[in-house]
Amino acid sequence: MITPSDIVNHLAEYLPRATSLFSETLDVSSVTIASNILTINTTTAHGLTVGKTILIDSGQTPNTIASAAIEVADTSVRLTFNDEHDFTSPNTTIVSESLPCVGFNEAEWNTTLTITAVPTTTTVIVNFPSGATGAPTFTPGNAIGYEERPLSIFGLQQVGTTPTTTQFTVTLSSDVPDIPDGTLTGITTITTSTRVAAADNIDRADAIYTKYSGTGTELWAFVIFNDMDVSKDRHVLNDGVATYTYQDEMRLRLLQNFSVVVFFRSADKISGATAQELSYGTIFNSLINVLFGYGGFSKTGDGSDFVPVPVGHGAGRSDTAVYTHVYDWQLPVDITIENGFTYYNDTAFRRIEGNYGMFTTDNNEKLTLAFDLDP
Image (cartoon, rainbow, N blue to C red; front, side, top):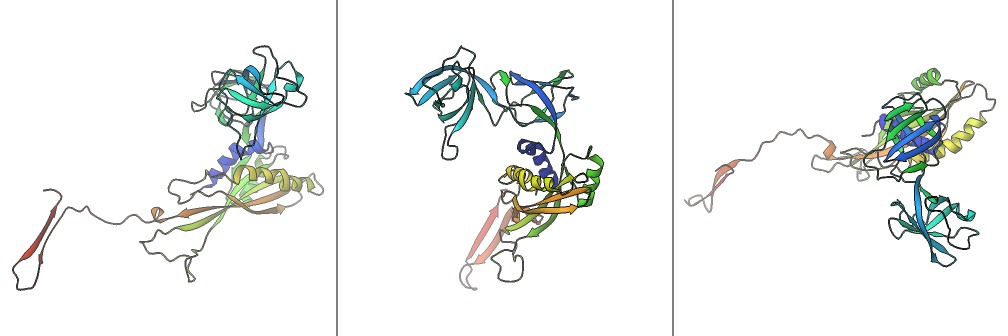
């Protein structure tokens, strides 16, 4: 069954990819990769130690282009990379993929190109960008295409070394496919922590916010679990929730309710309109983005694999100092006989003997049965 820490850990890992409102970050000046080891340079002293967990929520991987040739006249070009890419063929779900490029001699090609086909692991077909009249030209090694690989640098990482106060390294996990060496783009910050925590009620959450809110301008999100509901078995024609015998599958649907409560400082605000603007806009959209549709909360033994669904949100506790906004969620889960009682007494079948009369009581003929698993 899901627990509060499951929600907190999930939000801490993915919420920074949707919004920076709950993140503590470090500004980054450059990120390079060599042999799947990241070297990250920060603009100020990072203060990190070896083993510290950080979060990378953006970034694009470089792949140098070896050649560019016309695929269809005045329409498309085949680009060949020096290393294997991670693009997949466009389909009904992903109509096309994007490929930002730099280093071409023609300025119109130094833009984000649209991939229309992926013939091989090192080639892609791209449409002509606006203004292009032919295939791009370039000096070998200068033209680079950048790709955002889902399984790459993203997610929680651990600091491997700290050579200087403004530089540290990260060794990517062994399950990450080899990434071409070079300079990564699109990484301006590194998340060092997130302001997401669990609390058993709103008063505890308020106490934590009051103590750790720092300047008071930071937003905090608290996960609070509420009462679990039980959905009535629709096969039951009486007032019971369910009427099972121990021979039934006993599939019963539980509805775990929980809230994500966001705290805003309102002491220096007159109307509170800014908080509501964020609450009904950016924050709600971000929570939808990281919770709705995520099916990774099920545990071994759960009889289902449902996703969280929003059940409403609105203003919570509010005064002249603090405004809270409450987002209510529900996660269904099925339990079955496999989750239930399993402590029955039994013993292994070994042997049995018996005599049975075959016909009438005065008939001496008998049928003798004998079973012995240890003859």
